[in-house]
Image (cartoon, rainbow, N blue to C red; front, top):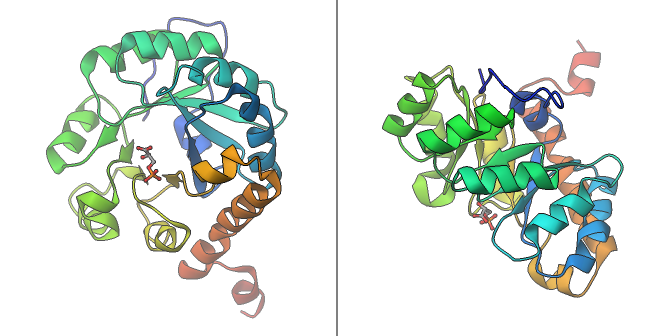
Length: 235
Ligand code: 3PG
């Protein structure tokens, strides 16, 4: 289960599980120019990726979250949430979920108090076990490629089978397939769908196309799991 016991009833946050199953990829976005926020969100949602993460790494991040939260069809979260203050600011700006590269008890407590779904980061079996103790069964695996990639997640699926992951860090359109074929992967995160140069050049049509390709990864996943439509039709 994800964190619960929210004390702030101002809105009912969607569960992290639900968000991670809306699309195979959560774009990880670092916004430097506020003018890019809305057209970028529009391009990604038009391409089929409705759940977006904006990292709190630039002065424009919080305002970008506020603007993107108003784009129809978009669910916006804050990434690089490192402490309770980050979580409070992101929540105030309109983020409906938070992502952190690791996890601390003060951050988890704060997100619970805010009713802000948290996707906490892990990179080892001990960290996963600590988060299981805090009630989590969905975690970010970070930095995915540098920490063993899909092979590591496959290994976790034996002893830690109750946990699902959103691997992030060093993932591409190609390597995403290996992760998404695993039964313990809910979705993947990555910045490849919105490359910095493409954003700077405001090439929204190309970003929409990258998002569309990323969305199609769910077809590969269904094929890998033997659940694609043509297969079932022919049975
Ligand atoms: C990050 O740290 O910015 C995210 O994990 C995304 O990583 P990526 O840029 O390697 O996709």
